[in-house]
Image 1 (tube, protein in one colour):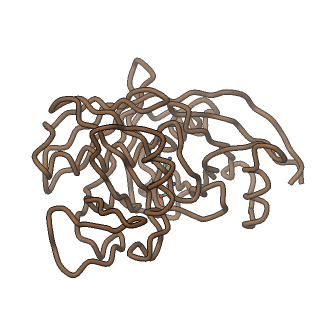
Image 2: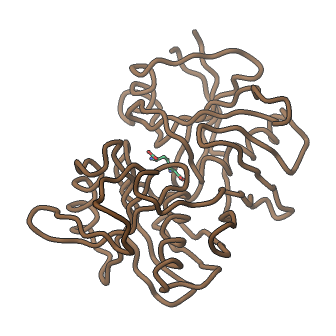
Length: 276
Ligand SMILES: N[C@@H](CCC[C@H](N)C(=O)O)C(=O)O
């Protein structure tokens, strides 16, 4: 089968986006891994499949797969690219779009400047919601990594994140600690690992070692998780500018009972076709 696709990115977190509204498309895990291979396929961090909704109150459903073929609940940068994709392809003319994901329902607003604001839903700090194995509730949880102890904040924003505050955001910590925490036995479904450097109450640097991918240039859910963790710990204010290797995101959260708001860009790179 000849598959038409669009290559997109949100701050360098890159996607292959497929229209499964106009034509039914199914992928198995091996096909996703092959397409995601940067040497032998197209290459992407995540595959996004745009489908008709199952709930008539929603506009679309979209599925998200990491390049290792695992299906995931939520993707912040992907949500913004999804909104640009359905507008560009005239699958909708709405600028406020309600979408079903594995995480639940989310709402996307396309602004006049082209940036997309995503209502990312409410976060949870309850370990079972990730899941994260912990003896009880705490503010910060110690975890052993290769003989050293790190303190993390577990956050679910629909998908699981471990946020570790660091003074020095260097390759050794991201590439050394990231993969060990990602697959740590205390995270039975694995976890996305965010390394947060606080610059001031409203500005941070962040690098994310993503579950099922490795370090990406940006992670939208990772930025949300890092900011809400920082707010919960008393390090950050309600609106924060997050500098990621691929660019900046604005994250706002007013505290428990409120949704996280994420605002950032979405870019189309090219369209293509490939035999599945
Ligand atoms: N890049 C994404 C997150 C994609 C999913 C993640 N790797 C997971 O396994 O949960 C984002 O922008 O949020």
